[in-house]
Length: 144
Image (tube, rainbow, N blue to C red; front, side):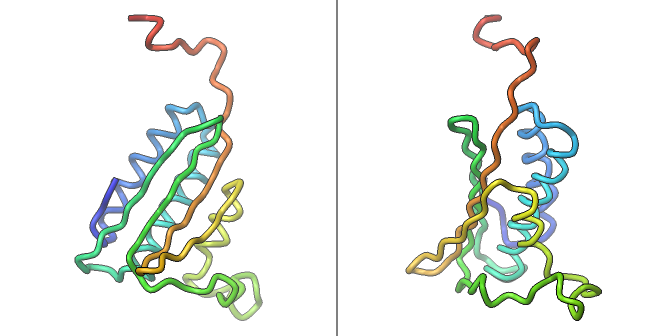
């Protein structure tokens, strides 16, 4: 999906992520945490990547392969140094209203990686192992 670099687009991102995670049989806690990680990545792409309200777009890609869900969130910003970010758990940062997005992503996902494009833009790639479908789940093709 591609969204405008506007915070009001995050509701659409939430809805799509939650629906997909439920379809993949994630439990309620995993749906909440994983969709929050996706929302944080998209919000960071808007706020720190493209800048809110601009004409640039944020791209969000969901891929399911080999029992893993891979989510890529791309912006067109100038990038950042993940190692230079303030520690959100440091005493001086504990009461700050922001700065925990990447910590949450890393806490809730199995893998989180950042790639920086030569022509500008950041790609955040997050992976999460998908649960086994319930034994009573039916395959749509079998019912046709």
